[in-house]
Amino acid sequence: MYNGPAGIAGMGVYVPEKILTNSELEKIVDTSDEWIRTRTGIVERRVVEGDTATSDLAVPAAKAALEDAGVHIDEVDLILVAASTPDMIFPSTACLVQKKLNSKGAAAFDLQAACTGFVYGLTVASQFIETGMYKTVLFIGADAFTRHINWKDRGTCILFGDGAGAFVLRRAEKGYGLLSSYLAADGSGADLLKIPAGGSCHPGSEQSIKEGLHYVYMNGSEVFKFAVRVFPEAVQKALDKAGLTVDDIDYLVPHQANIRIINSGAERLGISKEKVVVNLDRYGNTSTASIPLALYDLYKTGSLKRGDVLVFVGYGAGLTWGANVVRWY
Ligand code: UT7
Image (cartoon, rainbow, N blue to C red; front, side, top):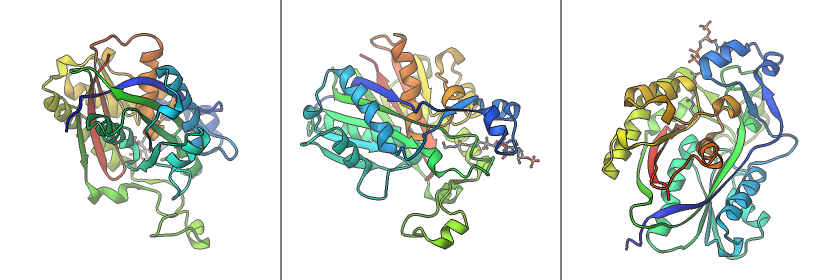
């Protein structure tokens, strides 16, 4: 049964305090501020310290979203966390967040779609509202990617940062909220971006540590080519499903992986730069948190108007990619 669209009733974000600049990276790995800026667009990123885990980033973002929506935690029916870097294999990060929020009644589970996790998760979370199964869903994208980085690998350590973003989802008026989603995957590209160890394939062992299998591995140029290809395709497919065109977009909010991917996607779609939200210069690639962190920049400055059409587009390990079309209300 279709019960009406899901809408964003409240939003919150959180980033750790510590800033790691390109100049500081120059001191630990063979790179330069100039190379990072021109090849990626990144200037600095936020990084966790000590034993801070993904759930520690998710909780303040979730609290801010609940406050923004004026919703008490007891009203939340489901906590869904999209995380590429969960606290542990199990229990789910969603259950750890539930505990830290002192939520008693809500269901809780994680969703894994790597850097496309926010787009996949928003689609899944919304369906609980659309079917009428739940009234209030707390959906969080959170990642502490830098906990898995090999700081000697200049192909990855310059890219990632940590952060979290959360939505409180509730039913929206007809014609508003989530209008459409397009999701895709191609497991034949699974080897291009991964953390090989820590799962049942290579459980953590002396050997796995020795071989560095617990770090993020990425074939950067292949992932780059993939991202450039799927970005415009995903946006176009989601727009088609919503019965809209590129001209209807007020803001394109892409996953923040590399400015060259974003510029290429925007150019191929024929969308002007003013409509494309970019903040990767300050945060780098925060995986599942990058779309809400970028959206929040618009939200907090009051730039979003009722009726604005927003498109979220994500791509990442799996390989996975997809897009959501949302009408703001
Ligand atoms: O969120 C999930 C999705 N992830 C992505 O979308 C990331 C996609 N990939 C990328 O953004 C880019 O591939 C990178 C930024 C990772 C790399 O940029 P690139 O333009 O593809 O560089 P490349 O790997 O083709 O390397 C070009 C050169 C190489 O040197 P040689 O062989 O030409 O002498 C690299 O060794 O740049 C060198 N290089 C660096 N130099 C300075 C690679 N990384 C660095 C670095 N600093 N950090």
